[in-house]
Amino acid sequence: MKLWKKKKKQPTRDELERIDALKRFFNRVDKELDRLDTKVNEYKFFLLVFETHAYTKEQLSHSEEFNTIQAIFDNVELLVREWNVLNYISEIVAKEYENLKEQYSEKVGVIEKKIKERKPTFIEALGNDIVIILKGMLIKLPTFIIKGAKILLESKKKDQKLLPPKKDSQD
Picture 1 (cartoon, rainbow, N blue to C red):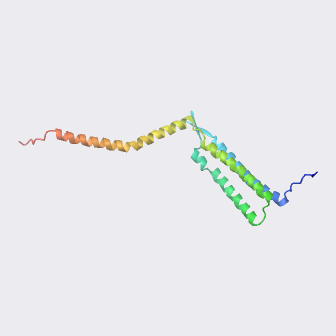
Picture 2: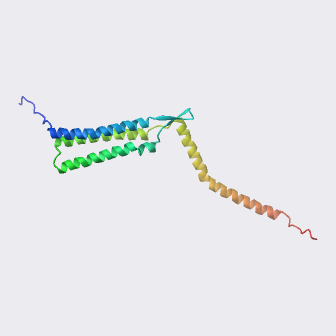
Picture 3: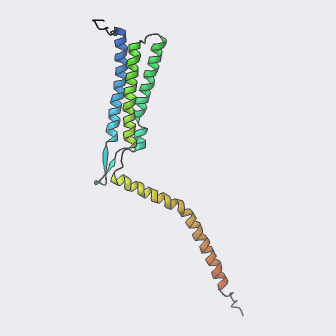
């Protein structure tokens, strides 16, 4: 029976510096996520009465913040690969990187879900319904115009057949 606990290996100074560098990168992701979350919940007023979202779902999904977050993830991945090639990465640093990557990937997923599931405001829902109706009308409009033109042409032909032939007034 052991009377002492096995001590955890303490990270070296180099490992602590690398972990600190990784945390600084991911703190930048945190700032971008906060900015994006603010945009998701931002409203503006339409005609001083109706509240609408300041940004559409498409604008949020393709925002500068998402591009920055992706760039940070890509840069950190390259950095970790470079450290691995140079044998600068230890098990402690690798575990910390994986934990940070997983943690922040989940945070990004939460924001993406929040954007996708965001409910439209009353005026946005009404506007969407109007757009759907107008699209339906525009799709049907060409066939309606063609049918109307055919009916008009047919009625003109019938009118011409019903009229008596014109007599010359020279008789």
